[in-house]
Length: 250
Ligand SMILES: [Zn+2]
Image 1 (tube, rainbow, N blue to C red):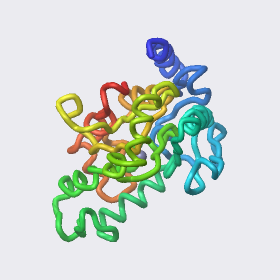
Image 2 (image 1 turned 45 degrees about the vertical axis):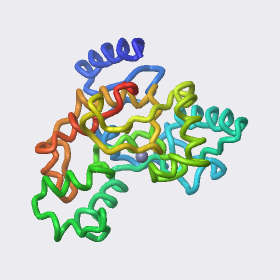
Image 3 (image 1 turned 30 degrees about the vertical axis):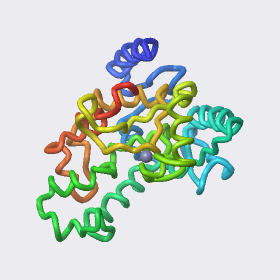
């Protein structure tokens, strides 16, 4: 991480000179733009992304090539110890996240059994309710091709039996492959951000750089083009959610 921060210093000089940003020659060969950080691209057409073989995933999905290589190494190591990892979700671009967000915003999809369009009129409160588990479009780590959801979208599943075995293995071994549980339990060390997600693991060699770049490059005004986007400033989307991750993953 020291090397990464060092390289970021030089890339900031780069952005001042050329108007585009490269996280570093090794970690992110393509220039990193605001559009990339906000997921405004098509993963299937991006040169750094690759489709994941269906043996590793429950559906067709994309990851960055480097994330995928690291995952495959982790998958093999886990398998040798009787732990079967399955990717349930990988890259989700802005358009995909907008569809998820707006279904909840408009009440087409219930949130905790509620139609939010009817039950929460205040837009800031409604956004905060959705943000317990779903990212605002433009702010999701899933935009980057670095983050994966594993096995089950359910914390309880990871607390007994097969799920607990998988979770314990990940806690003891995922870091060796670059992965970290960014949405850890909320407590004094992580007072803001999304609720705990035992299934969400982030590939830090790339995602750490993107987190730093998001802090430097994005402003609340960049969040537009979806219902409720003007709440981004009031809820401090960058400070509270993009940066509100497990301190052990920084
Ligand atoms: Zn996730």
